[in-house]
Image (cartoon, rainbow, N blue to C red; front, side, top):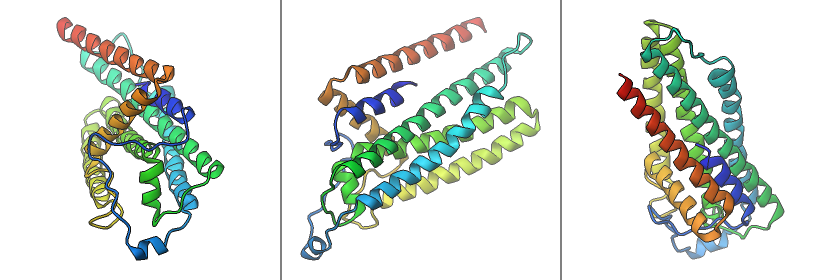
Length: 255
């Protein structure tokens, strides 16, 4: 789960250009007409505003993760049944993964805002073109991590309700599940629209594609930079997944 935060820091310190050719769902770059060329302008301030929007939401959610997932979260007890222990373990994993996603979104957004202020931006027809050309990894990373963090936060509420509220927790879980499905549907529609034009810029067609593109961009960044921090982040992610698989296997065997 530490892959995202360490990778964001490594990419941020590796350079100011975050333009990569995608292996999955490449961003379309339509040719500009004469009227579009005449409307070229500096969109740096608009891009900074978009990144600040994401940073604000991610910071707000991150503030709620700490008490809900760690400080006031359900504690393991020796008298817990195997089912309750599994639920609490899942809750802790959700809290850790959600925190990593939100922290990574904050880092991506903060570095991008700083770079937009420190370096000149080339004139573009719209802000989406600027993001697609020069800040694709930062923009896709911000959105993917924020949305994953938001879904993780909702799943943590479901987990907390099932553990702490007894039978009524199932009602709460269904309500939250309904809201989660609605949110994902809205997100998919927004991603598919892109910049609003049929021939314009589209980063992906849905949330799953956006997340996949994010990991593709991370892999391309790792190949390009050979950063020790990137390599360490991927290694730690593999260790975390292997440990999780081992724990799950031991739990199944014990049953």
